[in-house]
Length: 283
Ligand SMILES: [Zn+2]
Image 1 (spheres, rainbow, N blue to C red):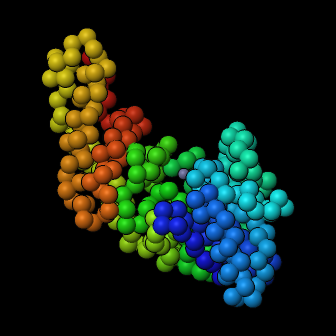
Image 2 (tube, protein in one colour):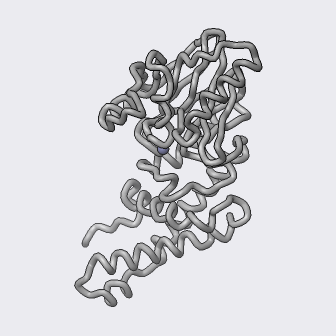
């Protein structure tokens, strides 16, 4: 059976099987409580409490920094890029996964099926989808925070086209329960769809703002100080783009008023730099 664990800010999960327990992430903030949760559930269900496998969703320390609390002989599994990044980071708290995969991998552990999939970079280059098809559960970390807005710059995402695409990849699977990695509750398909619409609205509004905000006044004001003019202009594009989104989602997605401008800035820059929108070639 799968279980999820939260401290109110972070989430991880585990699966009890006849061959041992499979952990999905080990956030350091949950830390030793993860072991306590596994022991408690294993005792209550009369199953083995030995953690046999640990699956990394991605390489970030805030989701994997409790990894070293588990036995050295646990089998760690993750994307091949997760291994590369963990070797680079050389953090004792996060031993690199010995087992890797590229695009897809299905695990059968103690009669339980676990599907792992990588659809390309999004929040991080190595972030994967974890599907438990027999339990209607999908885990995808740091994309959708159910009930809450993404924090800074689209949940601190490195690849915005991939980040915007990720919810559709998640919705293509069959599931009812969503483990997003953050805040104190599980998600639903409606949470993922709402987040998707929020991001679409930010992108649409960013395009409009790129089309309508006139940079001239900033270049006149700052003269030869080009970087100050650029900042004044891009900050104004961000404000204009974010305003209607903040109005629409305040009271709908928590902290929309707090983080929408930061996320909008990053989406607007991706629309300019990745998609080439608003780029003009000098005549
Ligand atoms: Zn992360």
